[in-house]
Image 1 (cartoon, rainbow, N blue to C red):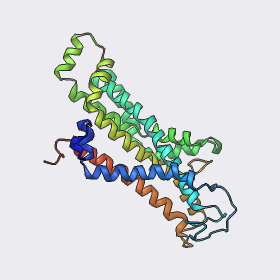
Image 2: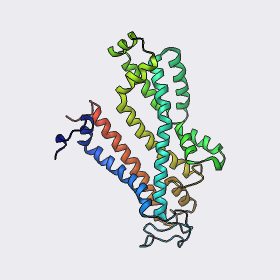
Image 3: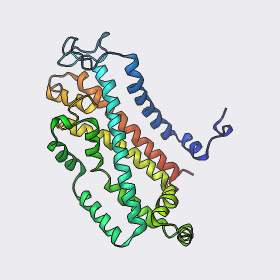
Length: 288
């Protein structure tokens, strides 16, 4: 059976015909299944220190053990799960802030636009990772949970989306259907979120994926310098433990390489998805 014979929306059909999208989404689904189903199949506790220390990969320990005899494969499964969890939380926190500020600024204009964009420019002028480090470093160790780390990254990551949404809204607010909505007496907020925002839904989806990507990388960066989650395990925490115990210098590749490879695989798959979506829906990039 061909795709043409299936009753699927044209948008989904276009995506399923794109090779890049299929590769990217397949890789990401594999990572999600590995993190969710892997824990049901491989049931070892990632914090159990019952194994031989610094054991290289073997039949009993497929990815070896760390300095304290903890199973690296179990850590990788659970670390991937919570890195994805942090990434999704970052997207759920940052995207509404950026969308709301950008949409209101783009539709309202005037003094409200200037105030909102002034706030955006202030936050944008400070590197987000530096701001996240400063905030995370001031928090007590016990407060640095997955959710708090995601909140720190999320509240420092939204400005670029706010500016992009504002630009999109300003280009759309002169359309005829907007004038009709104004004549009908609809409020600016209703026009922004009911009339204009659906027209840039693809862009918003791409922004969500990019925020997940940024959340995974941001958590890894914070964890590597010791201000990531203080309890639990993520891919960044695994790399922090490996760096603290000088695994690279001592050649314990099985300790840091799988976590690093998983971060690269996850972020690369998400970037491939966003590139493919842009290629499908952007007329300037669409293949003839």
